Length: 219
Image (cartoon, rainbow, N blue to C red; front, side, top):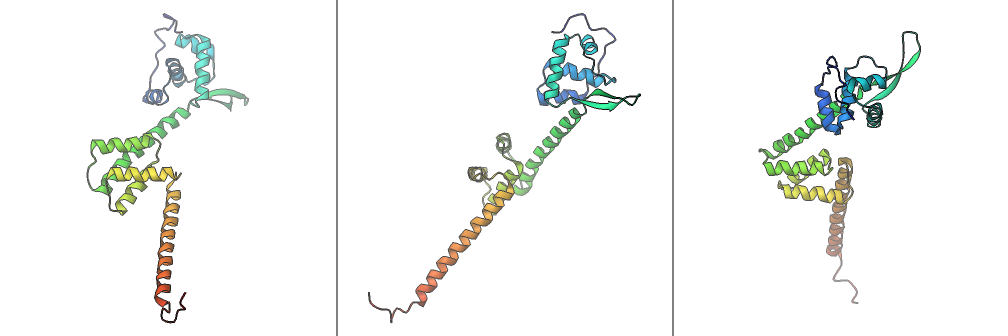
């Protein structure tokens, strides 16, 4: 619980954009956010729970629970480094929060890229309904390369309706195909089987044409 009146006027913390984005991405609790904010502002990397508790006005037990929760989420870590006396000591690091936010931003950029690919392949601007359908595929867990692969397969077959693209995605997922490598292998095998079937039909037709009907024994 936050104790009212404990925070002093000189305890001013800077809240960075990274922390705000991280709070949204990881759905941090208020106390987790406050602990991260303190660690981000504290240039002394020694973990002193009493000092943190006093600075934030939060009970030490709650402070420790929030810190442990951040450890479990991989947002903070306890590392070892040498001090001025060449002795190892444990220090707190929050470097990973920048990696988490950076990865999330890269995913957002990639997510935008798929819409551009659709518009380039179809040669037109996507409607709001089509944008929603693509988002729906992504939210359901379908990988971007599978979605783009289904788009190209539909164009190859001369059909560009989103209903047809959705059917392709459904069929691939139904067959357990999770990557484009698996899809390409499946399509290759299917093409080979079809080609073999045509050859078998041609062979039978030749056998019929070459059959000596005049000299054949009556049965």
